Image 1: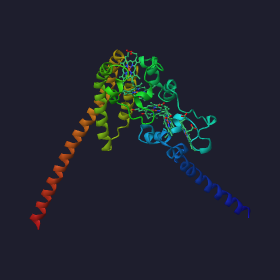
Image 2: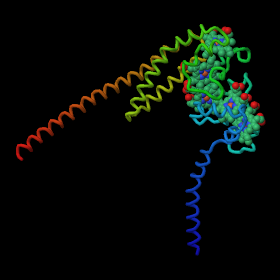
Image 3: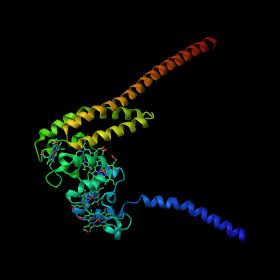
Image 4: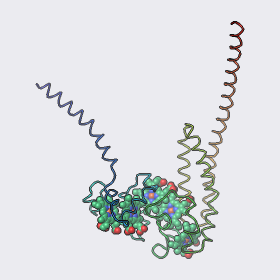
Length: 267
Ligand code: HEC
Ligand code: HEC
Ligand code: HEC
Ligand code: HEC
Ligand code: HEC
């Protein structure tokens, strides 16, 4: 009898501890209540969901509540300030709102000619990146339509030209790394290296200071050159391996031919 109770307790414990993590995981993957409710609302309140769905934030699991706060699991209290809901930020509060996560960018921005005019005609993060449809950043963000809203495009053009060469290097290296990745080569270290340099480079823009951009770009290009060298070495090894492979195949073919001839002679 006591044995049975003990056995049952053990079995019960085993099944519960087996079920618990699976249950918790299933719950984590459910959509935030923010999306469920806002999707069904009029344009003004549902458009953010549509725009956000194609964004780099959606891709990286940064949902409504990551930016706006609130409780993503409890529809009745989702927008309760007591659950950390922050609401929609007014213009002067936007840099700090985004800067909770993008600390380095915010620092450069606040020190720049743009940041110093925050609330007085300067652009905020969403002026250039939008609020919900934030995409992967590139120099395409510096264009006539966006940058001539407040001053001539001339200034924007100079800073874009100063960054173009480094950008081209980044794109080329990125392409070479993904080609190797597809063939199953371990590209982890190079990817991490490029990620760090790329981040430093893309942050740089926010000081909107051409002289500073030129100075820092020199160091960034030196770091990119190191990754390029590593890729060159990889190219070299692969070329040698290909030649080695071709030689081996030719040898096997020759051997097969000789054996075939040998067999025919004896048949
Ligand atoms: C049950 C429906 C419902 C849920 C759940 C919900 N919202 Fe809302 N939300 C609304 C309504 C209705 C409004 C407009 C009226 C208002 O501001 O209260 C709104 C407005 C907003 C606004 C604009 C506020 C402003 O000041 O203009 C934001 C931002 C927002 N919601 C974010 C969220 C986030 C983030 C979540 C999840 C943590 C969420 N909502 C969950 C219904 C909902
Ligand atoms: C990357 C951060 C970020 C994410 C993620 C985000 N928002 Fe926003 N949202 C903002 C900012 C910033 C504003 C205010 C911007 C402005 O004034 O242009 C805003 C404004 C809003 C508003 C007010 C719109 C208006 O026109 O007054 C609503 C509603 C809203 N967001 C809902 C959502 C919902 C729902 C989600 C999830 C699908 C979401 N947001 C995800 C940053 C974000
Ligand atoms: C809760 C944290 C968080 C907040 C708040 C946030 N972001 Fe992001 N953001 C991320 C993450 C995570 C990524 C994806 C990883 C990366 O690229 O850094 C990202 C990516 C980006 C990128 C693309 C970066 C790239 O590599 O090209 C831009 C641009 C961006 N965010 C702008 C904004 C803007 C503008 C706001 C405010 C409206 C904002 N973010 C608010 C976390 C956040
Ligand atoms: C919302 C208005 C606005 C937008 C949009 C805008 N700027 Fe500006 N920009 C300003 C203001 C304000 C200043 C500082 C006052 C001045 O010098 O006119 C400034 C100054 C600059 C400067 C001079 C910096 C210095 O240190 O002298 C550069 C370069 C610049 N902007 C580049 C850009 C680029 C590139 C874009 C587009 C991606 C852009 N701006 C979009 C408002 C804007
Ligand atoms: C005047 C326009 C402008 C403003 C204002 C602006 N950005 Fe950017 N941002 C850009 C451009 C252009 C790039 C891409 C630069 C490049 O490709 O090197 C960029 C790149 C980024 C990146 C990618 C950097 C990385 O680390 O990979 C992030 C994140 C970002 N911005 C966030 C923000 C945030 C947060 C703010 C506000 C504090 C902000 N931006 C304000 C134009 C702007």
